[in-house]
Image 1 (cartoon, rainbow, N blue to C red):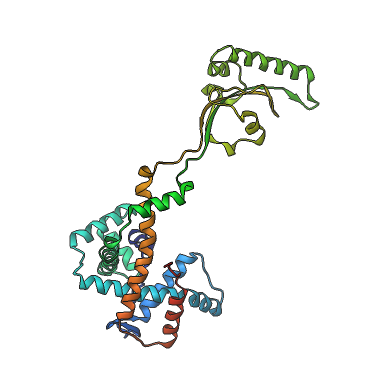
Image 2 (image 1 turned 90 degrees about the vertical axis):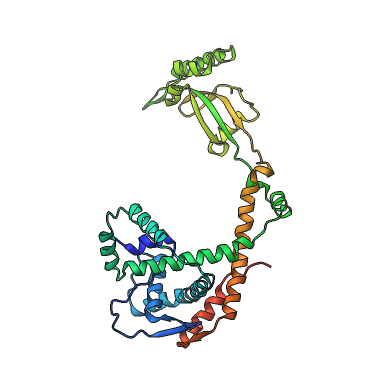
Length: 347
């Protein structure tokens, strides 16, 4: 059992691998407002990033491993510093994780992953070089980041009615329903042999199909006629097929039903199997959701876009106010590369 995957799924964050050699003095790579990120911390995050990017990664040489690490390290160190800044802000705001909250999360992890006891969870954690205390610290850090985002960013976001209406008017295609159609069919098969189709049998099948269509036009129920005469598997359901998107239909069938309204019946159609009669049972053309119905979805979409921009501004501010003391020049360069690689938010 991979507990790291369990925790990632539970808290949506990659865990650093705890050091199995606690007696070795850690190499400090950077201090962020006095708090340290160690070589072990970074390596754990690098491994988690590599696993997430490619779970089956097996570098065949030191050079390949070095290249893979160089690719993920800029984003990894930026995330590590940003997380530390957010956690520090969470502590300033007085956020903590109560024992009840922690126990609740642990119970959910156990339930979702079929871990039957605390002892089994602790044993699985031990295999990863972790303890329950390590798990709590990581969960608490994740919770603090989320609470800081909620209080410092989300609660301050506002979406005006003007923004909602402007988005709706500019993106009405997002709120349209997909055209759909429900059909009923009656198929009269023409027997085939190694020699091909017998003309007499073909004529007989066509005549039968025309007779059935005449009964439909005379007002007899299509569903009953399908059950009585159709050679298609849909006869058990009165010939009912769908609902389908119109694009799911063959081009020939789309042409055959073009212009028909609900209740309309096609002429007898020749198909590869024989002869077919189609009725349009229900037709749902494209409709657009009313603005009031779409308001909540639009607000979520705009808030999400704003959240990304506001978070970027917020984290840039925290970085600017922080005292970051680099102990490794290569890592500092990787951090600077990672910051430059971040997507730019529109004004």
